[in-house]
Length: 343
Image (tube, rainbow, N blue to C red):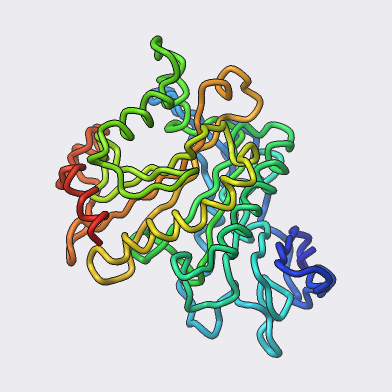
């Protein structure tokens, strides 16, 4: 446990290191206040938008979260003498802990931080395949644990990378949200799959991309990465296992082992597009918790998207996207796939 009672979990690649027994010596104050009831008017909680038919999370306490600290003050580095951090141990492989500044907190959800490496100056694309396997096992473990919490409807693992995306810490890390509702994008995919009358929507989608081939970026025996034919972002890739599963815990051992090399290949292609680190969001789409009907039709997959459309230009969500939800893409998806293949 951390000094204020938050949980921390180490995913070690060697046994017997004793990191979990290292005490957090910081004199932390009380945790951020918990959420209000769903229809409350406090600074925390979820509120229903009757016009959109969607939940909105109110989390005013996050205004005070750490914002782009100097590298020697990073709270995700291992602790060292004179600089205790969120990670009490003096080294780690992968660490997961409850967010100190969460958007959601129990009993209405939970937010966790996943630190991919203790190396502050690294990136996910610089990890070894073994480390990616460790991160994947952390995602799987937390998906199982968070899915078992009362009231949780969706577990969402993701990474934000780059100041252009809005990151507040540069240390390589991601997050996991346990939602008390099904997020709008997942709900829409579930509805589309339920309405698909000619078989399984995801089976046919992946089969179509394999058959067409022009938008496939890379693949191996267990995974395929392709640019969607109706991509919304300038550079966007969907990564599916070749044997479709509803969520990460169902992945076979072989698929788990094969994920790292392919994903690292994809991320390095993104970085090579413009000879600089790519700002991106990597988002795992998993089936809703406890919905057997949706699980029987849904296929878990990873979406990677970048807001960079050219070397010095970003994709902004302007009038049509933000105001009406109508996307306009400046890059033809087939050309985006070709550039990623050549990168």
